[in-house]
Amino acid sequence: MTKTHTYEITLKNCAFFAHHGVFEEETKLGQRFFVDAVLQVEPHGALEEDRIEGTVHYGEAFAVIEKHVTKRNRYLIEALALDIAQGLCEEFSQITHAKVTVRKPNAPVPGILDHVEVTVCHPEDSLK
Image (cartoon, rainbow, N blue to C red):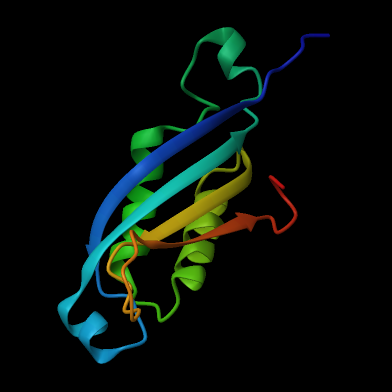
């Protein structure tokens, strides 16, 4: 019996311009958003056989993230993170768990901060 290995892909600090937020200024003007995705992958022998079939092409994973960030406006970055995590798992059957973090550097808060960030895991109990 051949042992198969799992692995993790991390896409870090993917940057996009989009129009998410609760306030009118956010949805009208837009701003930058940054996304990290940590993906647990079951490649079904692809690593041992050195073949791309069965793995997750990280360029295509980036495109899935971009589609979710730029194509539909959300009030909550929490909802956006969930959209991305679910979308990645739906697009790639090899992904067993997705942990997605969305950062909003220009959050409308009455103070100085670097950014606000949220993290969502899909399935819900994964990667704790």
